Amino acid sequence: MIQVVPLIGISCCFRTIDVANIGQVRHHTVYEMYADYVRDVLGAAPVLIPALYEAADTAALAVLTSRLDGLLLTGSPSNVCLRPDDQADHGFAEVEGFVGSADLKRDWTTLPLLRQALQDELPVLGICRGMQEMNVLHGGSMVHELHLQQGRMDHRSDKTVPYWDRYGPAHRAIPQPGSWIANQLKQSDFEPDPDLSDLQINSLHTQAVDLPGNGIEVELRAEDGTIEAIRIENAKSFAYGVQWHIEWHHDCSPLNVLISNAFRAASQTRAHRLQGLAS
Image (cartoon, rainbow, N blue to C red; front, side):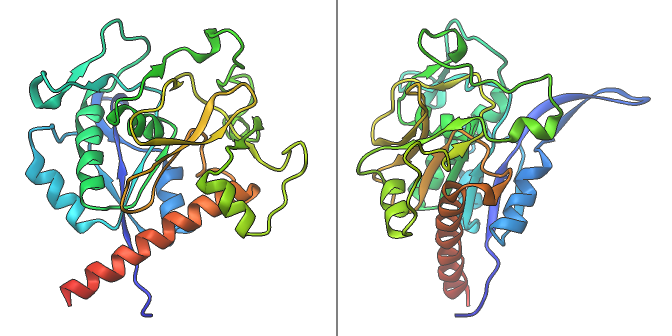
């Protein structure tokens, strides 16, 4: 098979940043690790998607998904502020009593974009906030301040350590019986330690999935029961979400390798199919 380089779209956030000698300037932003992950781990070409497409602009979103081979929904300090609402304009409404920082321009881009991507059978990987967007789109609920919930660990990062150290292993992830990842681990002949110490993941989030949405399968949980990975059951291509930052220390866990390999393979398959249709 001829080697092709898939095009993978990366969702951007919308932020106002202080620029020297200018002042506050609005930017579409993405952390460099996401682009590096797409290029170096997935072997694909990263395409940044600015947070400017409103839900009504379905034609532009359809063009995007028709030309991409994969979609990476990135993490962010902001929480998902919109929820599906058939009675609201464009099918989404803002959360009442919202807690945390919001990024409405991103919400109005990623939620309709994800809906279009799934319709067009585009492979999807959601990371941190990206996983939460997958759950929200399917009607799932969220916990905004997980650390305040009784019986839950503090899943926020340790701000007293250097930036790069915050992405080190923080706690275990437990595969759920019958899940896709449990089957992948079994087929790979990987034998987890009895205490699952080799299935460690990082943890840098305040918001988390509360109740899974329709068609959302829980794949992994933390020791305190927090949902750490989900899969869209009826998706016609790879559609997986992880709460941790898989783009960091990629080779440190078999979870990272198996999930990344599956996303890469699905994106390459689509790239070959689209290239064949275009030739």
